[in-house]
Image 1 (tube, rainbow, N blue to C red):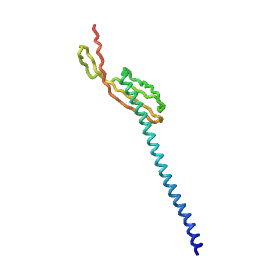
Image 2: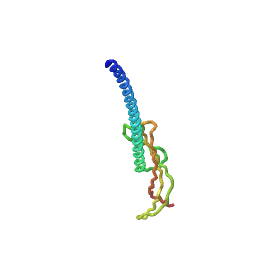
Image 3: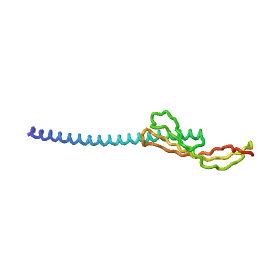
Image 4: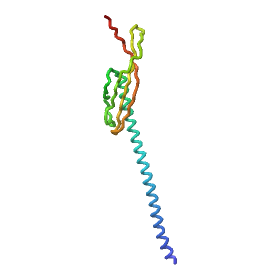
Length: 144
């Protein structure tokens, strides 16, 4: 009688082992999918950060080299993570007013808008920043 009871238990152990193995496999696949999703999100966030830093670098260069003109200018950066170099555009908006400074010369304050665009590693990743910049320019007096 004992040998008959052992045969039934061995078959049951195999079935339970297979069910347990299936459950462990499903849990493993589920956790792998979550890890892959988190990796993609982290990569996308890093790409956005690279594009943002590139746009800020272009914005800083535009502010440092403020010049007249409305076209886009490239800011050369030697970074492996960029698909394209960032660029910036300076637009003259309006004079804000004029005043006389301490040495007696008259200056006008001009308002400029700077648009900077940075690109990340992905072709579809870009960040656009905008800044307003005021610069004092000496007024040239034309005497007849």
